Amino acid sequence: MAETTEAGLPKGFRSAEQGWPALRRIPHPPRRVPLLGDVLGVDRHRPLQDSMRFARELGPVFRRRVFGNEFVFLWGSRLVADLSDESRFAKHVGLGVANLRPVAGDGLFTAYNHESNWQLAHDVLAPGFSREAMAGYHGMMLAVAARLTGHWDRELAAGRPVDVPGDMTKLTLETIARTGFGHDFGSFERDRPHPFVRAMVGTLTYAQRLNSVPVPLAPLLLRGPARRNAADIAHLNRTVDGLVAARRRSGGGDGDLLDRMLATAHPETGERLSAENVRKQVITFLVAGHETTSGALSFALYYLARHPEVAARARAEVDRVWGDTAEPGYDQVAKLRYVRRVLDESLRLWPTAPAYAREAKQDTVLAGEHPMRRGAWALVLLPMLHRDREVWGEDAERFDPDRFEAGAVRARPPHTFKPFGTGARACIGRQFALHEATLVLGLLLRRYDLRPEPGYRLRVTERLTVMPEGLRLRLERRPAPAPAPVTVPDDGPGSAARCPVRGAGD
Ligand code: HEM
View 1 (spheres, protein in one colour):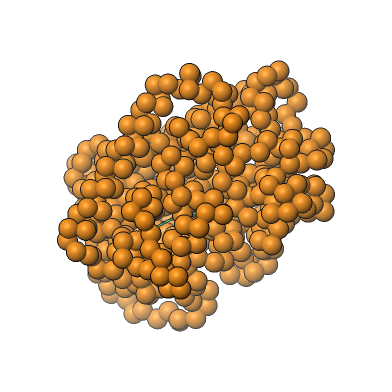
View 2 (cartoon, helix red, strand yellow):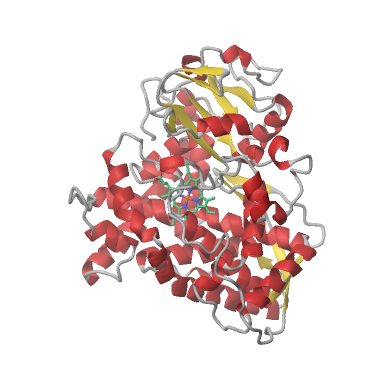
C-alpha cells in the first residue's frame, strides 16, 4: 500500500478545503452527487480527458470533488505562470505521484522536497545528462534505432502495418536500458511486451485507479488489483536487483548512470546513494526514461502521418541536413529544427506526462486572486494550458509546428509550454528525450513514407501518462537519399548546448 495518513490518504495529501480559504469562488461541475461528488458522466479509465472536458466548461481554474476530497485544477496561462514562481511554490507529491511511492520510494521523481536523498541523487546524477554524456549515448541510440528499422523493414516486407506505441515502447525501453544501465531487454526479439513493461504498465494503471475509488474502501474494492500490483512491484524489484548484481559482479561499466549510482560520491559531502535508494532510482529511470518518450514519438508519428505536407517538409529538412550520411552524428540531430518543431507541437497537444502538482511554500495569493495557505496545492492541466486560446490563438486545437518557429516562441509569454515540468523538479531527462526522439523521427522520415490506416481516429489511452491507442501505420520504403552537401550554420536556436536540467521550456 502507499504510505498513508491516518485518514487513509496518500501522505502529502491535503483536501482543498483545508488550503484554499476562498474555495467557494472557484467553480465546480453543476451536478454534484451526495457522497460521491463530481462523478456524473466520468470515465474512470480516462480521468485526464474528463478533466479536460470540465476545464472547457468551467474555465481556467476549477475544482472537482471525488468521494469527499476536493481538488483544484488549473490551466489558465496567467495562473500557471504565477505557480511557476519557485520562491513561493514547489513541486507537490500528490495523487498519482504519491501512489507510486511503493514502487519508486524516494527516487528522484517521487521524492518529497524535504527528503535529503533528492538533492543527493540530483547532484550525483545530473552530470549523466550533460552534453558530453549525451554525446556518449548517441552511438547507442543509433544502434537501438537500427533494431527498430530492422523490425519495421521485416513488417513492411510481410505486408503488415506497424504497431506504433508498441514499437516505440520497445525502442525507448531498450535505449534507456542500454545507455543508462548497459542492459538489453531483448524487446525486439519478443512478440509480446517484455514482462518488465507489463509490470510497469500494471503499476502505473493501479496508481491511477487508486484515485477513482473512495480511499477507505480501496483495500476492499481493489483487493485483486492490489495483489497483482504487489506482484508487479516484486517483478520490477527482481529485475532491477538482477541488473545491479550483474554490474557489481562485472566490476563496473563505462561510466553510465548505473556506475554513477553505485560508485559516485557527492562532490561536496562525499555521500553515496544507499543500496535501497539505488534500487528506487533504477526503477525510476527505467520507467520515467522510456514511457513518456515513447508516447511523444507515437503522437508525433500520428501527426506526421495525418499531415503529409508537414511530413514532406520535415523529410526535406532531414535529406538536406543529413545528406547521404549513413549514420548522422550527434551535432546533426540538433540541426533538425523543423523535426524538433513537429515534436514540440505534438507535446503541446498531447504532453505525455499530462499534469504536475504545485504547492504553496508559504501563505500566499495566487495571481492576486486566490488565497492559498502554506501546503495548499493544485494540479496543472498541461493539455489545457497548451490549448489556452489567449496564448495559442483561436486555432489552438490545430496541429501547426510553425508555432515553434524561433520568432513565435520569443513572442509568447514565459511558462506557457511546460511538457517537462518546471523549476528545480523539472525533468532531468529532457535533453535525453529530445535528442532520442528527434534522432528517431529523422531516421524514420528518411527511410519510410508513413500512411495512416484508413478510418483510424485518435483515441488517447491513460495510465498516468498518455498514449495514442491502437495506432498502426502502413509503411512504404523510400529510396536511399542522394548525396547532398551539408551546409547548415551552427548558430541559432536549437544548436546551443543547454543546461540539461534547468529551463524546462521556461
Ligand atoms: C518526452 C519525454 C518526457 C516527458 C514529457 C517528461 C516529463 C516530465 C515531467 C512533466 C516531469 C516533472 C513532474 C513533476 O513535476 O511532478 C518530469 C520529471 C522527471 N523526469 Fe521526465 N519526461 C520525459 C522524459 C524523461 C527521460 C528520458 C528521463 C530519464 C532518462 C526522465 C526522468 C525524469 C526524472 C528522474 C524526473 C524527476 C526529476 C526530479 O524531480 O528531480 N524523463 N518529467
